[in-house]
Image (cartoon, rainbow, N blue to C red; front, top):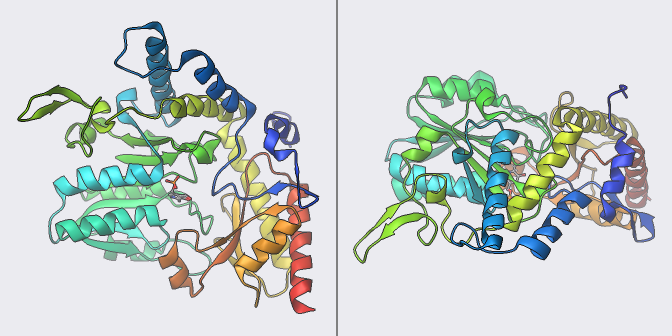
Length: 412
Ligand SMILES: Cc1ncc(COP(=O)(O)O)c(C=O)c1O
């Protein structure tokens, strides 16, 4: 640990949920890629809002409505700073990454795609970055293509980029950190290549935004999606970043209150972005909780969090590789993000997760909403341990011991 590193173990005290036993064992929470735990400051921000300020936003003149509106819009400004957007108008609140991508597919996609156009994804996308495009393709006649993944080491096969990134590609939409492999994709480089061809770009930052510094200007993307619940914030709140000029040209995707300027019996007129894309009463406490989460993460430093995640993941990878015979590990050996996906020989991933749970270790087993990738790798599912800054090396060591017990159980 460098002198400036936080005391990672001490940060655990900020997370009341971590201090408990599961099946008589201390909880080891390694399901952070599914959702992160929430620090006291986020819980307190939510409680404070409901105890003191709760009112609807943007429409009231009374004090509570003013306070709510100020807090809601302050969260937008904070989010812009968190990802280095040029302005708060580039931040749309959604329910999460899934809704953010659906918004782009429905609004931008319906307006801009026609038969012959290509939506370029990668073979490692989460279903939320596949299905909206498949639905769009069915509506517009566009085609969805997938940049290949190399195999178990889980890298994008960039040697084939020229074959896939052609002038027919109108949008490149790809994941920053793969939730199934732990791969960190070179998104800035790929967005630059796509831009040269005039394509629009979307980055799925669900697994990266809370784990590393994410700067939309540095990445050079047109859209970026993230989920609050994966970055210490509440469930039900997410973000779509859209580059100003691109958002300006997009039609609404849902109609209702809040997003209109005027409504007549014949037709409405719409507010400018971001409000054009936020119909109805929004989740108000969500952005307020998210604001507290962003403050919390940046007080630690996302560059440090990334380093800590990587150290845990590399340690876990090496321990699993050397201590569990026949284990199949997915994703790159070096430079991986904070998760490890694996299969023990002749043991179903669900059995691994069930037995690990008896040892107090929360893992995830399944296709991780990446069925096409699983199919490509020739597996149905994997088990996955995913880390965050409040996890420790001692927890990784205990997790490896538990897996050794699981392996013994199945080979006895
Ligand atoms: C890479 C990736 N993209 C998108 C999503 C979808 O996020 P949400 O369910 O919060 O919309 C996830 C969730 O696991 C994810 O890991």
